[in-house]
Picture 1 (cartoon, rainbow, N blue to C red):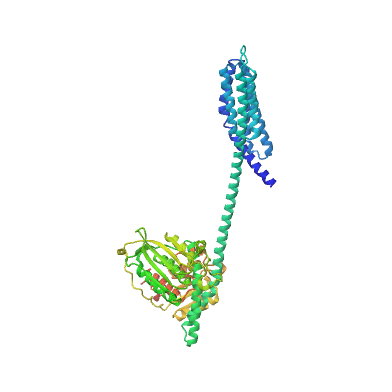
Picture 2 (cartoon, rainbow, N blue to C red):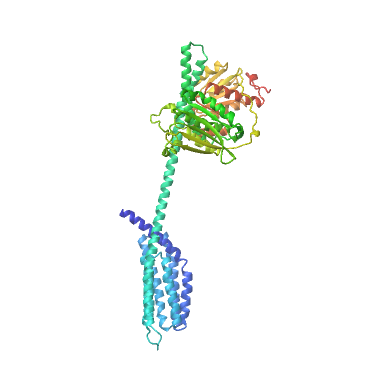
Length: 600
């Protein structure tokens, strides 16, 4: 602790030297004017040589102070104590020089002596600020000047005049003024030292905060890398299983085998949905989720969600109720808003054991918004938990980590999406009285709703040749099994070079490539290499990597990125979309066989 106090005192003294150095270069100008005025008065009543000789001495001392004091803070090669001693000696020299000016006092008139006293006492008062009230630096200037001034009034008077009691009173008042200045200087130095220590502590706290922020950012980056790596490693075998499951489902088998395959695929879908929650977090953190606002009616939109969640509610004997005026119409991104409402409804059903889950839409206090609420009669959320439920992986009442209740990412995703959509989400809940999540969505005129096209099934895959590049053999085998079941001719390759070799003489109609390949290759470079040989080749990237930087790379390259495990429906739909985009660019895929693509 002693060492700590010594370091703090050294910091205060160094700051004092900076202040004295700064003032040592400002003060000489007004002080020189005051000294010149006193020298002119003295020259009128005594030898001008003495008066102006004293003035020259004042200028020498002020010049020395200007030169030395300004450099003291930067003289790091000198000990701090020595530099402070120099400041003390210069202050003493300054005080002695000005006290010598009182030699002229017996020759001055009362008015001139009064002017001289006022100037000297003013310099003493100003020294409180210029020295920050440091006990020694201030007092070695104060007391030579003050005592000399008091003695001049107490001992000297004009020749022929009687000694007056008023002179003694004035002398005493000057000494008393010095005492007052000493107390004021002590308080000034205490405030100065405290302000320096507070500033040091603040700088230390700021440094600790920056360090803590850096550690938090590093921890967040490490968490993101861990989730991305873990997600990639887990998605690879899941993707293989999903492809084999889809291929197996297309083969003839007995009823018992069909049940086993169905349950296996359902389990894989459940696991996939939980992995997708991690992917959603990565996408939102990577800022690659675009917002496409449009005007749409809420009643049919929410009705579809009600029908979709109705079986889950019925399994728990819950009433899933929708109350929405037919004129309710909003402007937002329907896909992203659906993700928000889906998570809220899913959470409400999970945490409600009896009663109902209600989806309600009402006019907000502001006529410009519709309030969309998801209310349940579940267990409710204690007030001290209401902020924490929006944290990642945090769940109320699930210490055993029951996977049926998810990973605890739903509300974390909701908060990110709400911020992205610039909406306001409110929560009202109490233990035993259920919970209500409320969203204010911008209202729109229902006349602006565009009639939606009737949904239609995409066409089956045409006879086509697909090049699959993946460095994992189980994935290649599974992809071959699934795509062959859809009538595709499949070329398998473990690297970009192998893919190019296998494509010679049998040009692929579509490329499916993994993102991470061995040897430092990646899916984006594989697409570029194949397209340099076959311009305009439709391509899809399949990846288990959910790192935000990987998502940004694919987004910036303008490539469709599918995340493992890819379901059969999603894969086929993506292939159809890639072929449709290729046709729009003027190429007929079905005519591409063994040669250049033929324009339509």
